[in-house]
Amino acid sequence: MPESSLIMKVFPHWKHFLIAPLLVAGLRAETIFWSNDPQKVNQTSIGQNMDSTFQFQLGAFTAGFVPTVGNISQWTAHWVSADSVSYNPTTTAFEGSFNLTGNVAPFTVGTGAYVWGRSTAANKDEWILFRKATWTWPNASSFPPGFHDWNAAAADQVIIGSINSGGTPFLMKSAAIASYAQWAVAELINEPRNAASQDPDLDGVSNLLEFVFGTSPLVPNAATPTPLSLVVVSGQKFLQISIPRRIDHPATLAVEVSGDLGQWNSGAAHTVTVEDSAAALIIRDLTPYDPANSKRFMRLKATLP
Image (cartoon, rainbow, N blue to C red):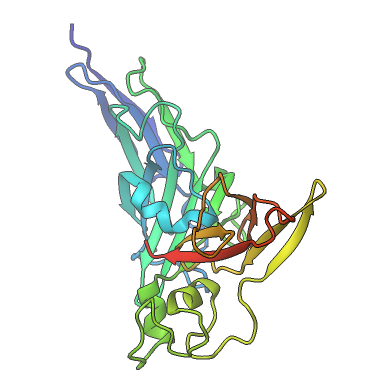
């Protein structure tokens, strides 16, 4: 016989009762309540209160993609939203209720769920992305159906932005993210050579790399922006490059290595990532610098998402 049910839940910090018909004509569903506590301070990167331009999405990333500060430029391409709500500046909260009726990828059982808040402005965007380790997509066919209460204050993994579980001096704070186009409007105003590949200050660093490094595209750089060094690992010397990137300027970076300046290679078979954090990106060559390999070169390539 077809199953049907009516389940009522009181969501503690909501000002109403939520009645969710979860099982209708044999349809099962898991209900996910996702929100932040109201009447808390939530700010942008410059300390202004979040406003109604903020949208919060509950979702997941595709194909096992794990978001980090190092791959921000790829987030949008891998993101799939399950539910979306607007931020209410009066209650200072977002409140969503989502009925998961199936486990089609990327919402497969056990896959990590995230909350992504975004606001778009003329010269930059504001982002906050967070989750809790236990926020994983449940089995939509479970019976009896379950309720899941995912609150921002419980987040223990904040990939970008900030969250204070106690709510002071703020609960949530977003981080500024600028696209190349937004950056170019501010940094290359009235400059006709504003394409990513161009170099108006003639310092050998393209506009795109100036964007990545956070340097001025109109002032020649005095020092090499990506210093190379020789490091010793297990008694062998290797070439290593340090990249002073701006994580709030999304671009896809690839480090290539060569022994002759003709054939260039990249990837896990040729390089190893020593550090990939908000502070630094450091890549090491996997071919030792020795008499058999007396010439080793490294270079950085950047592409826009």
